Image (cartoon, rainbow, N blue to C red; front, side):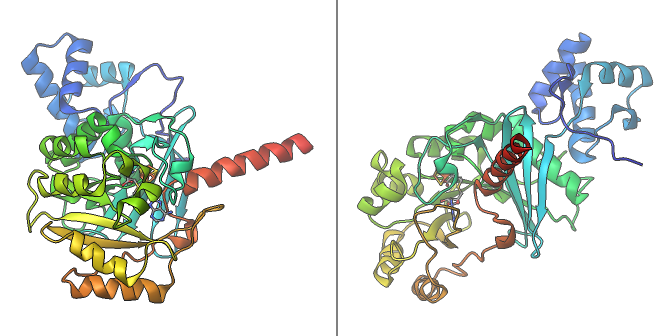
Length: 379
Ligand code: SAH
Ligand code: SF4
């Protein structure tokens, strides 16, 4: 028997309900069936549980909804997923996906086991990025567009399908955390990111609490307060340098919002405290930012900020102008950080055999298609 194809079809005129917020679902249903507010709310709650708790993709399984209503729903709506264009499983259990949201709109996400409580899904918030961090492959790709909230939630749904993680919740879940560390700058798409978090965190559905959702930013200072107030998500900062001259080069948004301003916004991030620390990411670039002096400076800079430090071995990509620091250098750097009281500062490279860093699966597949096209043209 072939698997039913649940992926979203651009030529299907029916509206996709998967990924909508409660309010959106309520208004879509209210409008479609001329329901008053109370009935629309009830209907939305029923569907909500089916879509986000049970992972239903077919109205016919919704046994608490009358047969006629189910048929009426199926005539107008679908519950679809982004299409899995590529799926790679690494020897360490890391799973990387390239998903097609709509024609020409492809984004990737990576599931990493043993991160957070059980495993973390790294989602994309944009296709491409407007920023140009020099060590980041996504930074070499122009922004195609923001992902909608439904497309961000769609990444979680597609991976839960693949992990067989329905119904949601339960003690043995593998997908326990969501991190916005895929393609794009989430704080340049904050409305959609906030809506997606609202759906992901809802206790009647996917039920991944806001404390297990981390949003990583390159330092869009003016949006940080709103992120905290609107989402109560955990914050991660891509720091990568300890002085403005170097950070201006590596993370060019630093020219607009320099380190002192960034750290001051961290100190006042809503809810920050020893139980809710901010993660500082620091990518280890050989001969660029990896001296002992910089490790000491990093510790000094973060004094007074409730912080965790994450040293990320640079994940090279074809044509990248950097190399990863040697393992000995990373350990020496980590040792200084560790002695200053920061636990387990090195993030072990995951999924190396499938190039699980930002932007890389997408570019590999684009390349493959280009070479296939060339081959076909040559025949
Ligand atoms: N735009 C946001 C979130 C996406 S990037 C941000 O910049 O924070 C997620 C993390 O991956 C960031 O810390 C980023 O600096 C890091 N990163 C990007 N390219 C990398 C690479 N080639 N190797 C290691 N880390 C990388
Ligand atoms: Fe964009 Fe983040 Fe990559 Fe910088 S590191 S280019 S902000 S995705």
